[in-house]
Length: 306
Image (cartoon, rainbow, N blue to C red; front, side, top):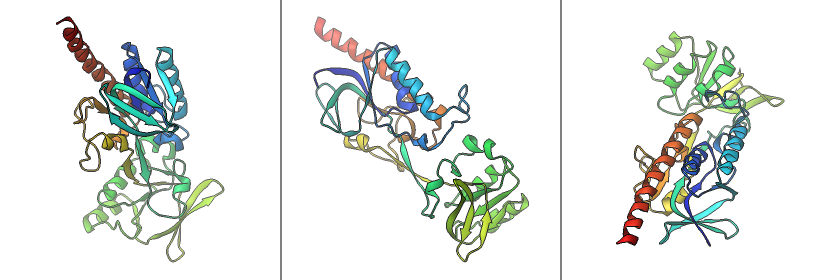
């Protein structure tokens, strides 16, 4: 705690690094505290990321870290365990006892995906089990695709994924049964509806092979699109007085929370943010935090000269 940073960024994913990059290019003193567990670490490649299609997500982050360090920013591998307000702004504590003080705090800690409790499903996450059709649909086009229901909107999701393959199976898992109109719409586009609950996911070596239904019937599949429940890693935001609304801490159009000086970007506040959206949100937050600091610099200068 011997020095005060202009900005402490908690989270070294695409949102946090984008915020940091904007700030270090604005000649701000920035430290990024990175727990090294990005949401997309299970995926071997990114898709629909302009200029980086097919790049492993870890390579994108490595490039970002190098860019930030090239401008004088600091990247610290550390697990954040707490945060509090201070006269200087914010104190962020990491495992091992070290603390970092920042005039402003940007939280970009992402979220975790909680998958349905189907045996074998989690083991295939990021490979044979995926979530985003825009990220993975092209790679599994024209293959045998299962869409695992997860409540309202699941039938509409199956209709969306139908865009990538005509061989589609809607797995209600005994709980996501479509209403008569939805069932008619699914059948009209050749989407098979399987109403039985799932017993387990089947594999052939490392590859997904299908699902076994309760009762023993087997449905052959090449991939399953699931709808995990997004749970934000927003402990730091909550500790500092932010409050969730509809499951996530709200931010304004620039990424500011209701807590002065506290900002957030990426999946921690927006579960729908893929890599490009998270990068854009982080860049916007970085620019606006710099504007906020400039305004404070002006106030401090006036106080000194008065």
